[in-house]
Image (cartoon, helix red, strand yellow):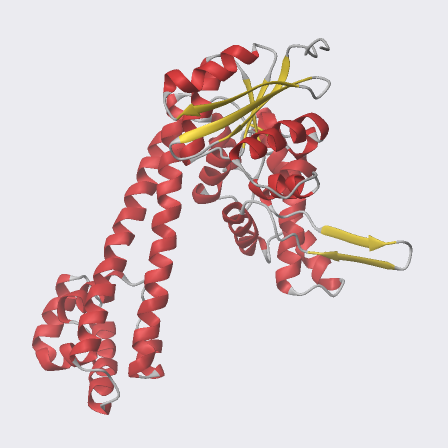
Length: 392
């Protein structure tokens, strides 16, 4: 009987996280399996694989939030280095390995072997203190509230279009007083049935300008008289959606205030506000989503934020540059949209926009180019935590 193969100390610990149970696989530096383990999603059970793997092992997970949060928290508490392998990267890595089976144990080994053979696919994860976790939770909740509000507004516009495009154009879901009136009286049929007096009282309580209230009433009354609406069904839908939009507006405003309080005095946040076009919303998103110590250059940060162009070439005959479709979508949208405020300005970014337009770029493409150029400044300001100083 041959001697059992000896393995070196664990160098990589891959953990496939699950809702109630996790699967772990530890590899040594040469790729030998040191041990495998299935563990319950409990702190005492989660601690055992990292303790067994030792201080030198890199802990790699395939989920860094939700079901993976406890695993990372326990690993960091034990002083272990941690990294994250995105799900799409894990799937591609598994497809390159022999066999077609998919089990938790196989996934754990795939995670560990990818960490060993392709470390560039990993995303480092730094430990968070209580303040950072609280800020991230607030930011995540704000993102959810904004997405819910957008979904409600889209549904709101669809209901109004049923009654006619003129009414849809007359109603502004971003107007607090209009939403307050509609949440009280309902849609066009309800407002018309209530009469001008009741409508005017509701508009006054909501803080509507008198002239705008009259215009709004006339649009609603005309729509009700056209007979194109859905009557009581339209009233109920409009009332509920207007109430939902108003509530979400309040939630977003409250979260903005809490995030602002949490970031008060933060050097990086205050420094970001000195960059042209970067306002409180974009600065807060950057601070909560980016650990600048994990990025080695502004190229890496731009790629993470989704504002780096994607080059594609084949041999010497085919080459193209197209917008990157990956990255953090929230940051990408904020960084590009905020560049609208730079159009027409005399700073370096406004002039660069003019240069891009002069070269034949469309407006949106020029904004993306400006956002990419500004990332150099964003990276430097976040790295040094010092205010931006314009070039002289």
